[in-house]
Amino acid sequence: MNKIFIVIILIITLFTFETISQSTSSEVEECPESPYYDNPPVDPENAYNGIIYANDLSSIEKQFHEKYMRIALDKAIEHNSKFGAAIVHKNGTLMCTAANTGEGSRILHGEIRAILNCTQLYQQETWEDYYMYTTGEPCPMCSAALLWTKFEKVIFGSFISNMYCERCFTQLPMDADRIFRLGYGINHNAVLIGGVLESQTDLLIPSVCGTGSVFSTTPFCQAGWTRDCPVNGIFSDSSDF
Ligand SMILES: *[C@@H]1O[C@H](CO)[C@@H](O)[C@H](O)[C@H]1NC(C)=O
Ligand SMILES: *[C@@H]1O[C@H](CO)[C@@H](O)[C@H](O)[C@H]1NC(C)=O
Image (cartoon, rainbow, N blue to C red):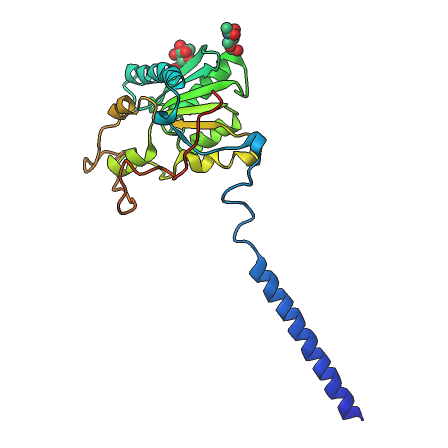
């Protein structure tokens, strides 16, 4: 009688153990790789629709942006710099400018300098109705800064992919689009426009391949990459100008 009792207890114990370990392993299997979405759920009221290319803009919007990109470009040229920036109210008022002069600190990129300049001039912390013009695609640091400071639009000339893959110019190899699509996490999506006056902003960054310059690197780029390949395969309409 006692032996039978012990066997029953043993069977029950084994069965319970099996059930627990099964449920634990199935929970592990259900865990997502990351707590975050790669592509956020779309909120039609407040969506980021991917980068817009200058060539896809209406001619009136393109002209508007070219006018202010020219100011950012001139600022870079004036300072013998590779990168210039300008902050403009959407009503067309130029607020401030800046160039990456390479002085002071390595984090003072053109966009950061412009934000600091405008903040000092106008004592304003966020820029909801303003556009940032920058001759080069914002790096991950600047892209994040532009989202935190809530710019409505960010317009750039030269692409990181071209500076890095084609001309060996040191860059963190990540498209601004990758950061801009995360804006949902801080309740702010900015419009990102690339390639405005690109043929002219590109002249600021000639190839440094094999020059041994501190800005030169040997790029790791995908086989078959060419300038004509879409940046993220995402295209969008420029509907709300
Ligand atoms: C445009 O916006 C700027 C900055 O807020 C303001 O100072 C200026 O008066 C505005 N101009 C017009 C015509 O609304
Ligand atoms: C800040 O912006 C003003 C207005 O555009 C400009 O005159 C000035 O040169 C800028 N400051 C720097 C450090 O670029």
